[in-house]
Image (cartoon, rainbow, N blue to C red):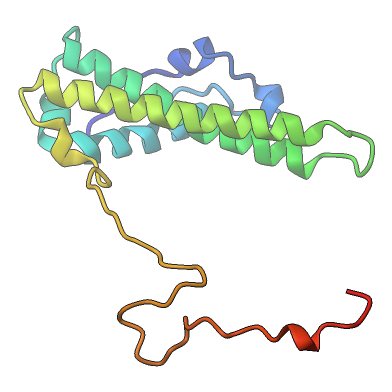
Length: 176
């Protein structure tokens, strides 16, 4: 597999700091650091989405390569937002941070938005290669169904489970 299209500097430009993750000593180390490992995983994800051959063949300074780099940054950002959320949640003081759930919800929203952006960038990279991006994403089908509830009997209810039972007003207490 080729090296990721994005760089550690791209993630630093997104605003991620070592202090946000417990200050790991190798946070910005080029090939083996915290951010580099996140980019390596992101590169594998993008290569799996667009196809390894297309990923390896993408030339620098092309639109497709730029989109793949942006997808890597977004996917790595989604991972980092999730990690940041878990780091904060693990270090939250019990009862001392009343609004901590708002911060965690914000971080989870940012992670979801970053993943959506990564999928969009992957679709653009696939389109740039002349491919059909709609075939790469599951969940594009429509499904429907009906649920029958209520007090009315169903026409296909042989057991009579949905049958209406008559109500006897004589069973009500006198004060009713």
